[in-house]
Length: 167
Image 1 (cartoon, rainbow, N blue to C red):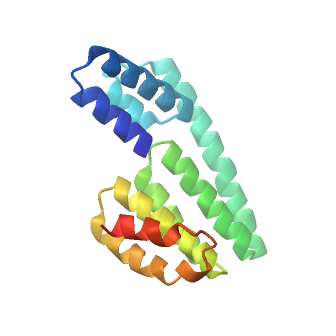
Image 2: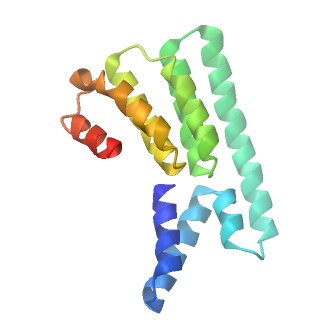
Image 3: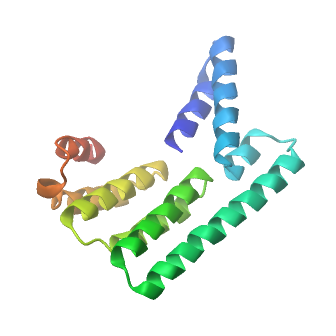
């Protein structure tokens, strides 16, 4: 989503016609490849109904598969599988332009973390999603939560990433 936002910004703000065409072409390619209906509808006033119907059907089928995996994991009471299923749903939602849903699934995944490293990574995902939504209060809150997991994150750059996110 961040890449799409940046490409859209470049396409709208640049005065260089070649750069604008390149940004628009890359944006359309990325949107179609991801199946992001939300961004596609923003870009195209005259919509390609066939592409929209096909993509909607594919997205619904993928969502049903991911929800079935979540249900199976919940039935088995497997915390790692439940966390993974929620994160897969979050990734799918983000890919398809549903950033709020991605944040919702990521927040639910946090309840099933079994280590400080997992908690730190989930907090980082929340920070990225909150930045996409311009929810800076949530960014600040989750930077503070992630700082507790810094010592065991396994990523030497994690503390620096948190400082940048907090700025």
